Length: 480
Image 1: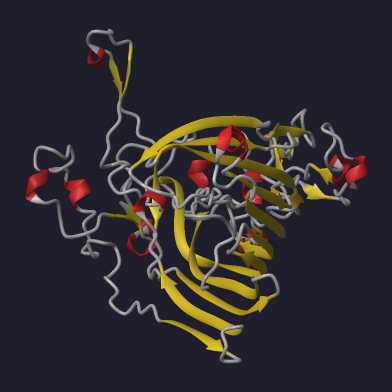
Image 2: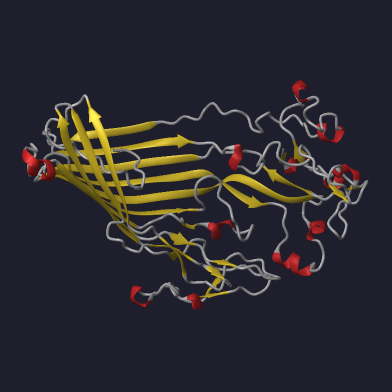
C-alpha cells in the first residue's frame, strides 16, 4: 500500500471534524492510496478480510506489481590495477574504482506492504466482557489513516568506490602502505514527512485537531521515501606490517571523514520538512582519527620445552592489540514542550570545552545551547558534538604443552582493557534534561578469560603456533 499523489482527486477528499474524525458519507477515505498489480490473487479469497470490499479493490490502478518497472541496465563496472614500479617487488602502485548499486528493502522503506489500513483492520469495543469482548459497544468512528508514499521515479541507490595507494618494503622486512580511500553515494534513500503544516499554520490553529487542515485532507501522517540524498567518505590510510620472524606487528592509522544525511538504511529524523540541506552533516560514526597497533612475539626461551623448566617457561606467545580513536559525534536535541516544533536547539556560542576543564558532570559548555522561540526551528546541525575518545589494550598469552608425541594442550590467558582504562562512551545532549551535558555511560572494565584446549593428531613443528589476534573494527577499504 502506498500513497501516490498523481492518483489523488482533491474533489473526493473527505471532510474532517474538529476532533480529527472523518465525517461519515463525505469523500473517499482512501483517496490517493494505491495497491500494486491488477487485483488480489485468487489465493487471497477467504484469507484477506477486505477481499470483496469494493472500495479496496478500487485501489488497484494498474501500477506495476513492484510499484516501479524492473531495471535491467544496472551495470556495475569495476577496475583495478597494480604496477611493480622497479620490477623487483619492492615498490608497487595500486588503485581501483567500482560502481555498486543497491536497493531499498521494504523493511526499511516507508510503504510497508500489508501492514497498514485498509489491509489490516482494527476495531475498538467498549464495555465488553472478558470472555466475550465483542459483546460491548463497537466504536464506528473513522479517523484518517497513515500511509507511506513513493515518488513517481525511484533512482537506484549507487555507491562509487575508489582508492589509490603506494606500497614499498622498508628495513626489518616491514611493508609500508600509504593510500587514499574514498567513496561517494548518490540517490540514497531519505524519508521525510509529506502531510504536514508549517509552524505558522500550526500557530494559527492552536487548540484544535490539526488533521482537518492537512494538505492531503482525509489522510493522517504520510512519509515519503525518496532517493534524494548523497554521502561521501574520504580517508588517508597508513599502514606498516611485518609478518615474518619471531616478532610480527602491524600498525594502521586512518584519518577520515564521513559526510551525509544518515546512517545505514533509510535516513530520516528531519526537523524542517522544507529544508533538506539542514540535515546534511558529518555522520554519527565519523571518527577523525583511528589508530590500531597489533603485535605478536613468540618468546625465544626454551622453545623445545625440555626439562621441567622448559615445560613451564617455554612455548609462550604473547600478543597485544592497542586501539586509540577519537570519539563519535552526538546530535543535540530537545525535550518536548508546548508550542515547540524544533527537534534541535539554537547554537549561541562555542560548546567545546578544553580537556582539562571537563568532568563527568560537564563534558561541554551547555550554555552554548538555547531553546528556540515558540513555533521556530533550531539552527544547530545534526551531529556536531564530538564525544569522548577511546583507549584500549587487549593482551593475550598462549602456551602449548606437549603431553605426548601427538598430544598437546594449549593454555590461553586473555585480558580485555588490560590497563583498566575508563573509556567514556556516551553523553547526554538533550537540552531540558536534568543530565544535559553529563557523561551517561562508560565502557567495560578490565576482565580476564582463561581457557585450555586439548589437541591431538597434529604437530605444530616444535614451537608455539602463530597467534591470531582478534579482528578489530576499522574503516572499510574499497580495494587492496
